[in-house]
Length: 78
Image (cartoon, rainbow, N blue to C red):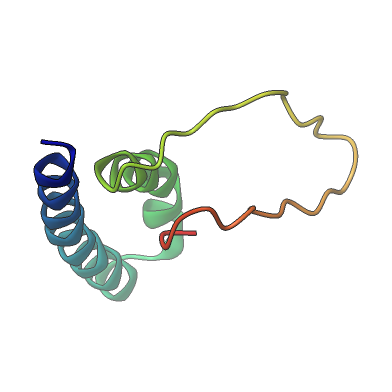
């Protein structure tokens, strides 16, 4: 049962990834980045959820310092 659910998530995530990629390319060519950037965090979160990568936010990052954020590469979507 888990394997069927996993296959379903990969298919759904792959389709969404293609639609998301087309959206990014079309919006970036037709409009400027100021219209594209505000929508990317929401769309990226949906894509990761469809691929089965559950996002956990532990702490809020302060805006007054510079940080490097690194992923732990636990899935192929990193």
